[in-house]
Length: 569
Image (cartoon, rainbow, N blue to C red; front, side):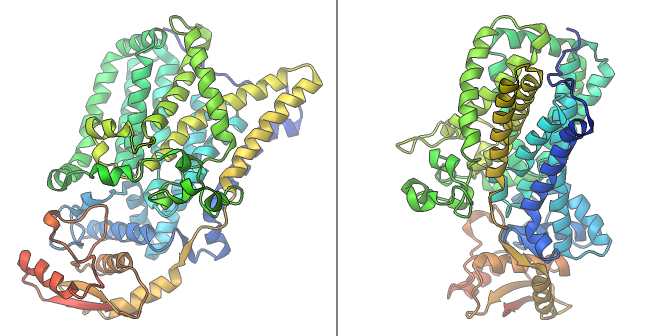
């Protein structure tokens, strides 16, 4: 097996400064367009407004502040001091490792907590685009314009914007880097030296574990997609032969890289296995509420400029159990294109079932990416009668029991969609460039650019994201912090009955104050709650709330004086 000729986008015979600049102006424009869409709330407000609302952005800020404080001797990294005295609370949510490193550096530089999280998310969004662009441009050798379009779809797609409040889901840039390393090994085949093959495969292993420690959902969906891809690839004689020869030739680098993966997986296992052992996974009744149906794949939210009117006209959308989690639509054009590509991919694989053209080895593998993505969608789908193949995935595949919001798979499936979209656009633009008939050249090129432009338009037809004022929030937290005595050992929060805050708001307020002041709190909020149903402090407005607090203190024999902090602002 020699080096695989994967370059499929050529420079053509274009001449002139404009024709040379256009392929690079296009990705630059798409990058700035995507960053504007995701962060215009901040730009409009001179970075006072933090997009995403007062829920998860403030929660993640609290968790990162716990990490920052623990690095500097206040508290324990493995047990952020919420749900006190529960241990191992780091595993109750994502670790946010990628954010945590940058956040700590920013806090040491004197930035406030919310400015620090803003910069972290801003950086992650930029890296999502840059890393995907490098995968497409350098890894797959697509043209700059086509690579820019694919990178835009991965980094700034509509489902991702609809999840802007879930900060951990914005950090996905390790995934294209993993794939880039694997593509380089496959691309060069037997011509690659073992040391270089090991280096790339080991990097892929490390990058994958960094993604696991940064965003579990993204990592798990990517691993499951990869499993389906390999299952299909080894089911087809031609692709099986290619992969078998590649793996056997590089068997020592593959085994060594697998060892690297296992070793670098240990921190993830140390954080999460105790929590899984203690609390278990999600119940399937909880999971199936967020298994998408057809309406979820069409729905882009009521604020979408083109398709928001669906809400008033389709009862199926209004019946979605968790509307905020099931806004998975990519628009109208991309799904229609994807249906056509799926049909085409089946035909391509039939032709390449036994033997493939060595000069076009990428053809069946691109087709496999299409079919794998379509298969994933069919598995993660709620069919009539409340039936879904995902029940089998939930029961059989490791880690699936920890996946509650199955609908978030759209954010990861955007990567194979981006790869295929870049490939198809590159091929069509190449065809238009080489076409001698002016009318046909304009037709192919014009329709390609029109479809690509409409796909981009559908991703960004949103008003600015919901946000909160960090200056107001910082002033409020400072006021509440002054009410917390310096000699406090532990505290819990109550709320003034006249204030409109939700129970979630109060729990996150407590975590923010706890993290900044280094004082444990009985309150807390995360994807998990302490075991045995013994923690009832979420019912902060219940007449029995003080009784719940006393029961928790007695259950855990907390000896310290517990301060009662009233949230009155």
